[in-house]
Length: 344
Image 1 (cartoon, rainbow, N blue to C red):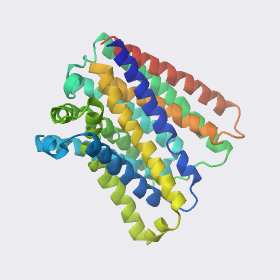
Image 2 (tube, rainbow, N blue to C red; image 1 turned 120 degrees about the vertical axis):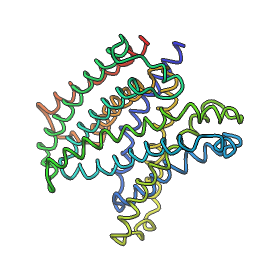
Image 3 (cartoon, rainbow, N blue to C red; image 1 turned 45 degrees about the horizontal axis):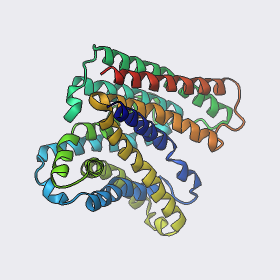
């Protein structure tokens, strides 16, 4: 059991780090705009990859799916649809209130909602036995989230300082207050990624196992089933933008950037595979702690990518001190949440 928990921690940490660093292929693009790389990468990551894995490794997939309650499938895809909407809202907020503030508020709200809700409204399978908020484990996990929020705060402050030093702060057209409301909503909706898995995995995995699948491919099948809702937004919105701007032809101009988009899609899907399995390994608190650890280490991964890609070049003084402090605090938060999981 202890080995499984350690495996769960490692997998959720990796999920966060990969998610945080996944945008690096986008930094190499010259011709593709958001709508082009998003259309290619999101279809690849949300539909193509999970379904290829599922069809190859899970026998009798469609016979298994016919045994599932259609209401469960609708609920799971509504969760992922919410996450897809959050992705679009976050993009709009980058323009309205800036990248640093958007990222900080979004991760902060998502962490609170994503950790607390599964301890109040129990998820499926083993997650249904999650301890209450007022239990020793629950209080410890909440303390970890509180520490994480402090880390997110310092990371946001450092981002402001870096943007000011480099004179790259985003302009704020369209209303700052409206932007704040949008990013809070985006943070709450972004938990749909985790909830889609946590609240549907038990039934989907069981029918896949009953039809001859191995445990890990069965967990991938969950994502194949629940992610079409997210793809509905994350592919249709870019398609709408390309139609509006008459820019579909840009997709055919660069095989290199198609390749980079596919690579980004792969890096975007890997965290799902890691997070789902990591949640299951963590046990009854996996839906809460797994998501909390993933969010914390996603921030760490994003900051690491920033350093490696030169975003901090020429920046010194308070912003650097704040980001170093944020990194330490986020690591401490991850340790506290992992310890809280052990108390369950």
